[in-house]
Image (cartoon, rainbow, N blue to C red):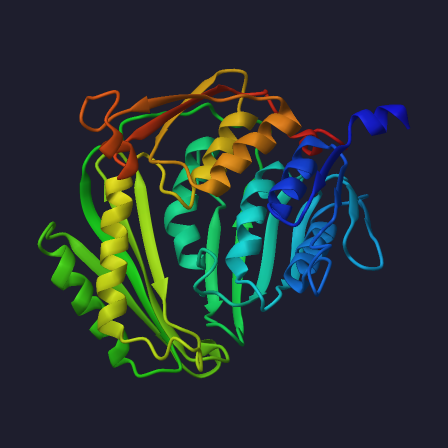
Amino acid sequence: LTSMASNMRSFEGSNFFRQRLILATLSGKAVKIKKIRSKDDDPGIRDFEASFIRLLDKLTNGSRIEVNETGTSMFYQPGLLPGGSIEHDCSLQRAIGYYLEALVCLAPFSKTPIHAVLRGITNDQIDPSVDQIKLSTFPILKKFLGTDEGLELKIIKRGAAPEGGGEVIFKCPTRQKLRPVQFTDPGKVKRIRGVAWATRVSPAVTNRMVDSVRSVLNQCLADIYIYTDHQKGSQSGKSPGFGLTLVAETTNGAFLTAELASNVKGSEAGPTVPEDLGKDAAKHLLKEIHRGGCVDSSSQSLAVLLMCLGQQDVSKILTGPLTPYTIQFLRHIKDFFGVTFKIETKSNKGTDDNEEDLNTGGDKLVLTCVGVGYTNLSKVIL
């Protein structure tokens, strides 16, 4: 009991709920979270968090999960990650991307390769879409795994918010150890690719989005190709919607992404105009390119996690300004693994103390750490 108490981490509040459970699972340390929305009118964990807990229960073997009656306190003692086939109906409060981000962190360390079928919302305005995870997260994962053989994310049905109706298949190979990565020169942007998707609306919507994106980006680059994906019938989910995911690929293999989705049917903001969405998505991509780095803001947290779990060797990566989510992730990595990152500023303009540069997100950061030499124990247990 004493060793268990010393091995347990305690937190308060509902923020960064997913981070804490992911890191608890990987480190094997128990976690207790108290005062979850205890002062709210509707206290306790939400439906999407309960769905995430159920997904963790399916992923692990021998986990102990206890949630009190009001849902304001939970205890989680992680088990092993056996892998294999799982199916999960995700809560419609959040998109499939919310669950996939966690799966991507855990899947490489399971005993056998994961084959997951997830159902729910594939694209919304809150979480990374399935397209963004494929275009931005997979290239990072591939660098640490050393291969993309067996890594797959396939959209069977698209499902827009709020009703969903989407379905995806995620497959991931397992590794006993990760490779250390040195990635500090993103190179220059050489081409832009993307996906313009639409469900239960006119097929012309996708072309209107593509034309408006080109009106902005063709001024910067000629090599632009955006795939149009108009789903109909049973593959179009249960709600009308459309959106756009763009990715800028650099000469050194960095992938910077941006995306937007239309307003939910009946929302107070009113209907979205495809031309406006296309132009705004193009501007978001240009902002992401300006932020720079070798990983975009949506994949920063995965990159720092895999750097921490790498072999006992130095990993170094260049990023743009850190997102609040990544900053908290770095704190939690120190809590669970005792790893501290060295963060150095690399200024765009060659100046050290340029206040304007910092405020506009002009500074890039070099993150360095020595991995903990994390070994996938599940691979060697018979």
